[in-house]
Amino acid sequence: MTGLGALIRRNCKLFFKDKGMFFTSLITPVILLVLYATFLAKVYRDSFAAAMPAGFAVDAALIDGTVGGQLVSSLLAVCCVTVAFCSNLLMVQDRISGARRDLTMTPVRRSTLALGYFAASALSTLLICYAALAVCLGYLAVTGWYLSAADVLLLGLDVLLLSLFGTALSSLVNAPLSTNGQASAVGTIVSAGYGFICGAYMPISNFSEGLQTVLSFFPGTYGTSLVRSHMMGGAFDAMGESGVPDAVVTAIRDSVDCNAYFFGNAVSEGTMYLILAGSTAVLVGLYVLILTLKSPRKK
Image 1 (tube, helix red, strand yellow):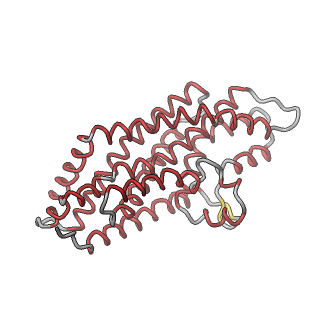
Image 2 (cartoon, rainbow, N blue to C red):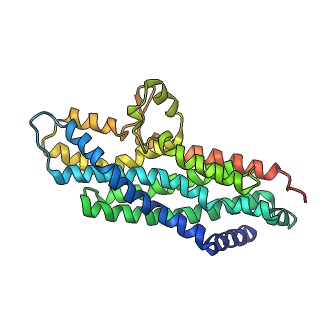
Image 3 (cartoon, rainbow, N blue to C red):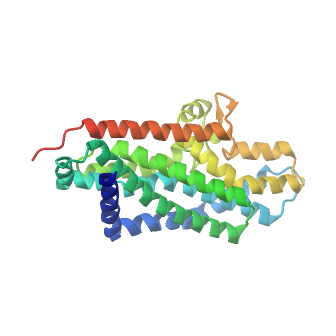
């Protein structure tokens, strides 16, 4: 345990010592929030307004709060994974520099070394993602606040599980990489494609039925659904209290993936948490196994 603690401290210090990597990871969520609010807010606002029954007017503040919830939930769902790929680059850099080979020659077990990388990356990712959550909550306080204390606590749990999932996924993907070019290519692919796969950029309900079935096997889909549900649930409750028919509210919830389905069957919130936690445990196990069995690169 002493060796693991020393490795975690060492990896965290190296990550925060690289000011370029740290500040880039930290400012990325803010940049995304500005881009989302600039280019997507009007599209979402028109979509929600069009979904209202004919002749039924909804308070503009409620629409703004709903739009804000969709924007920030999309941002958090993506950042918890993409930031993890940035904070996990130290493992690749250590292999390039030969530091990982030197560490494997010490009495520290390779499984401990693997867990040290994972834990340090998870801590760094959580720090940045919780900062992003604070910024998102501040944005909602300005555009329209419909969250309860329970919603905020559940959002904290969602960010925790999604960040751990993102760290586990990035650890498994980055484990065999041996060059900066490979790491950059993987980061670019993940940044460009993950938002579509998890339903953050475009709700999965807008895809074809076959693609929806395929994406229902991805754990990140359920992470996005959890964040959306807790970020937008209060606004939907306010819609119902304002007189919007329950059928309309349910249809809107389905259209933005607040409700997740697997082969047409609704997936409960507890099941989504189990899927996210279980898949994270599996990914961590595979990553530790790969790094334990993999031989260090020779000069």
